[in-house]
Amino acid sequence: MANSSERYFPWLRTSKIAHRGLFEAGTEREENTLAAIKAAVDAGLGIEIDVRITADDLIVVFHDETLDRMTNATGHVGRFGLQLLKKHMVGNSGKSMPTLPEALEVINGDVPLFIEIKSSPSIDIQKTCAGVRHCFEGYRGPVAVMSFDPRIIAWFKKYMPSYPRGWVIGREALLSIKDRILSKYVLWKTKPDFLACDINLLPNSLTSNWSSRGLPLLTWTVRTQSHQEIARMYADGMIFETTNSVEAMNDTGSSEGANP
Image (cartoon, rainbow, N blue to C red; front, side, top):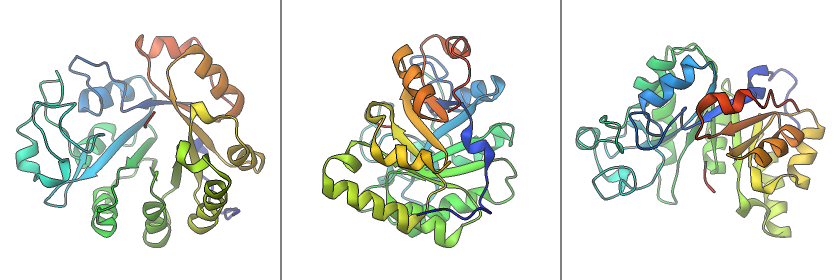
């Protein structure tokens, strides 16, 4: 389960990471928009975004599997080509969902970027991961990939090992003894460089053992003062949301020590 000592990415311990960008719902800075991403860059924060593959095998920045919640359209994102998706605005932003290359252009390597690759049982892992890899070509900034799906982590371990990869841990990974044993197998098989665990599951034996070995641990989604206290106690960094913008997080100091 141990990682090679040569795999050293100190920026994985970024203490504050803006969840889906530094967004504000109902404004031009809706989640996962270029405006939210730019706001996080301007604030000097790390950024977490979600990506999905379109019907024409392009990579867009969007969280949900369907368009229903965040646009005026319905249906699965993966059943539409980019040209059709670009006709629908995200929330009240007045803008359509960006592509991953558009997001990378805004970030320009200025802050660490954590990309959660979304999946489903029917997803084509090869096309999705290769599409993300293609977007990275020529990008020089610090970037990591992460996913709930061990198949995605395993793909990057095999085909793109130079990039740090992380496993996102939700409740299903710790539900039973069987699930915990399976989780240990996933860690051994995929050898992630970091974990990102649901704040509501901390502390637990899996992540405590991980941290005891000096490996990076992030937690999501930090929304309250009590969440911040837990994050500072058990994790190296917090993937956060706040209704009071970045100032509320600045008051908490660094952290040393639902669905993302």
